[in-house]
Each structure stands twice: as C-alpha cells, then as structure tokens.
Image 1 (cartoon, one colour):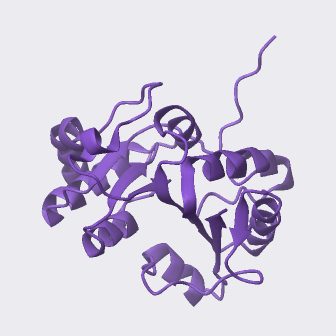
Image 2 (image 1 turned 90 degrees about the vertical axis):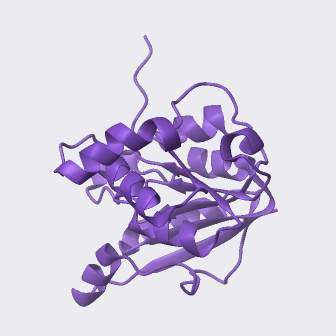
Length: 222
C-alpha cells in the first residue's frame, strides 16, 4: 500500500480580491506555466539566456516582484500553491512590466524534481517557509534532508540556496539539515547576515516589531 506524500503546506481558503482574481484569470495564461513532468528549457521559457532563480513559496509576491524588478538580468521561476498569492504576484508583474517572472502554481518539491533540470539554477530562495511549530507537525517542514539534496542537485556549481525564517528553532533545524548535505558549503560560520539585496518583508517587519528574530542561511553548491 502506498501512502500519499507528506506536504509542506495546507491549502487554505484565503481572501481573493477582485484585482487578484482578475489578474489570475487574465495573466496566468501569459505568465503561468502548467505543472508537467518535463524539464523546462529556460531560453524557451523566458525568451532569452539568463541566470534563473527559483522562488519557493512566494506568499503574496511582494518580495519576488521587488527582487525581479531590481535584478532585470535574472529570470525568476516563482512557485506557490495558494491562489490569492498567485493572483497578487501576477498583478504586480503586470503593473511593474516584469518580463522576467514566470509562475507555477504547484507543490514546489514536485516542480523542482520534475520541471527543473539538474544543475540549471543560479539560486533558490526559500523565504519564511511555514515553520510547522508543533512537534507532531515537524515532518511537514520543507527543509528536510531530501529537500536539501534535491535543491543542491538543481543548482549549478557555485549556485546559492538562501533561506530566511523568523522561527529560531526552525532556523537551527535548517542549519543542521543544510550543513549535513555534502554538496552544500555554508558561506558563514553559522547564520549569515541579511544580504542588502533581500528586501525586508511586511511579514518580517511585523515579527521584528514583536521582538522576533530573523535568521538567514546562505549555502553554496560545491
């Protein structure tokens, strides 16, 4: 008997504004990529040859849109399961005229495994993933040894995995997991300073105002 895979997310019914819905309906055919078990050709996908970054779980898309706007020389594969977030990012893509973003609404593990060729990414960003704080839910956490190995395999040598979280116990867990992946080298003795190019999100600012810490991890593919 086979068991369904453990997901790192739960599909929740969030608020879907009219603007998000309109962007979702009108722009997903243009900027969206359907999930399929076949590796993407980046030149065909983005219409040019450029370094590609996978944005895993982009939430409402503010950070992804800003990074893409500030780094036009890079292309961004944005992955999210929640429909309001997808609509929000698509709206920002249209408003900002961002030609370097494509969106996949699907489980990021399956997208990386089935749609991203080994050694083809310049970077992977995992910003503020669900920490699943209850011990019985820790198995749902995205940052596990299997994901570390998958992420490393999809990065080109010298490519970077950047993780940020405001949950200290999860940060320590992620640090241990990533340090245990032989294809990764930590760029810092432990946690890294937040790079100036990573925008401070509204979610992050709210946490900092409540006295929460934020931990960045920057690992390079050997």
